[in-house]
Length: 50
Image (cartoon, helix red, strand yellow):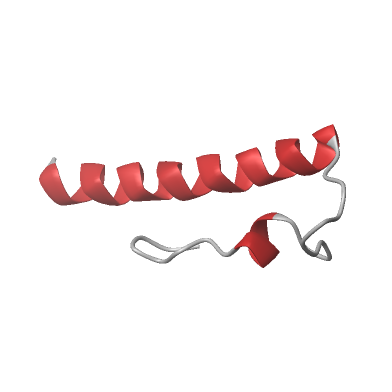
């Protein structure tokens, strides 16, 4: 996931469709993906403005 790219629900919860149960482990994996995308954005900004 790159800067400015939307993170699709299918990318956050692969194999899940509307109405599926989402387990705690699914939320954890999705949170890790979001955190990685945010870190990448901060790293790009740090490199640009340092």
